[in-house]
Length: 119
Length: 109
Image 1 (spheres, chains in turn blue, brown):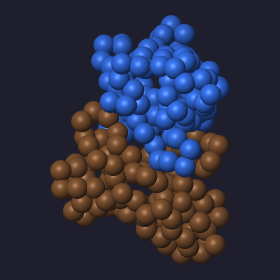
Image 2: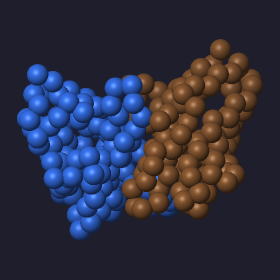
Image 3: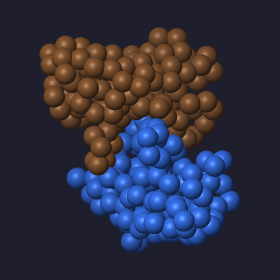
Image 4: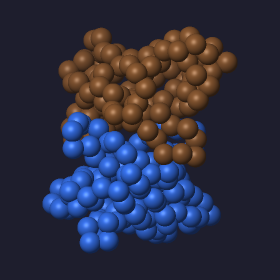
């Protein structure tokens, strides 16, 4: 069974940093591309970042470019999101999601970790 | 890429059918078949219900179906059940990353 478990969220002041982790199991993590998607309170889903299976290809949403860094450790079956220079508008539930091999979509999601940026 | 437009809420009684729309533009939804639908119960992981406009992943009930006409994709749920009450999001892959709709809250009366 595919499982994705996020951790690392919490309360941080504006301008601060936080590192999110996503532990993957139940599939061959090193073969699959991954994404981070977030949902601000009362808002819809927003794609944040993508990383290919070998980390060769990385994309970011314009809203986080230059502040967030996605990475992965295939030996540890783990995905990361380093978030720097955090802003109030980064407050959201952050989900890791696996990119489907069979279709242009994400097919499995974690339950999310909450990031709150507030003074 | 602009966001996709969904109704904020829809409702239906058990056993009825409902349809949730997802409207884009002629340059996105109309031109691509990479539309997906996700079901999200608050506090749980979102679940893929439909991909490639109308394909169902293994294990998803055939009460869920997807379609597309012009700039609008649709998710239809037939034989509504209490457990279908959730938020539903459409998404579209065009330039290598997904764009999501604003979400629709389905209430089963």
